[in-house]
Image (cartoon, rainbow, N blue to C red; front, side, top):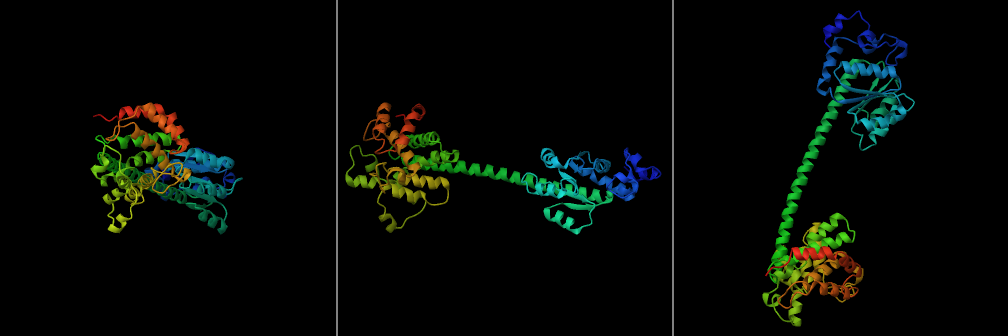
Length: 423
């Protein structure tokens, strides 16, 4: 509305301009003056009205238990160009209305049957609402009211009689702050999305590298390298069957293929020997996991001399950082040759002292070794492989994990077929 239009109607009452009839004594927005004096319609007001265009589609909610007051403020905002202005006159349900509407701004009276300050307190304490600016309105001259409102987080506190020249700039500033917050929030979400995308790319690259290392080790004594992939798949199936959370199941499936990474450091004369290993050769084989640490972190000669078993060596190879995946791979490398009855190596752990990841991979690894052809033995029939696991349940293996393995036999056999070694 132009200033000229307002000037040409200088003899008309604002009640008529606004299309509402309000006795002056019923409006708490001002004293006993006409509505024209209450709103303070001047040329300055007319110029202020034009400032709302940039945010004209923003949602504004007016809360006041006096219907006359909300109609007046709503009309004023409409004249200023704001198109989405809603009102609410029941303080008891004001919070529910704010939650439902999710406005960009709330204009709220203080003195109502439910204090506006209480509503403000509820809004700023809610993680979902605290970023909605609230302009509070009061007729009180008490500085404590102003202090309380601003300390609680009100964007502004306006006093009555309310003037459009005071209200509209505050509305515009509050919406500007809201718009800036929304912009920062969107930017933050975009950055988060980019970070997640980049993290996913790095994770894929890491997994590819890990699987390449695992297959490199397996190629030393198996021409296809499918063993490590199958063991990872078996471990993932077992973890899900045992009810582990999704993240742990994925970590286990990706970490399990590294269980024998130290074979890189074992000579072909041992890895490919067709007959039974001598005690000395078997001791050397036990070192294969840990020798792989040299790929990531050089060891001194003294440290190397201290390595007594392949599981310990493998653990030291992989345990080189804070990555959850590498930590789990380290745990598996160290414990997948422990036995339920305590006769395994390298530590001689017993029962549930053996980490769950090690117990799971022990079953997966032995089953795949039994069902695969090696230079020292033929592949056993599937039924015999499952039978051996059952026979050694409670001695070599955790009975609970063996039972879970038996219950997913169909999935295990399917993977064994899909990833079969082809001569």
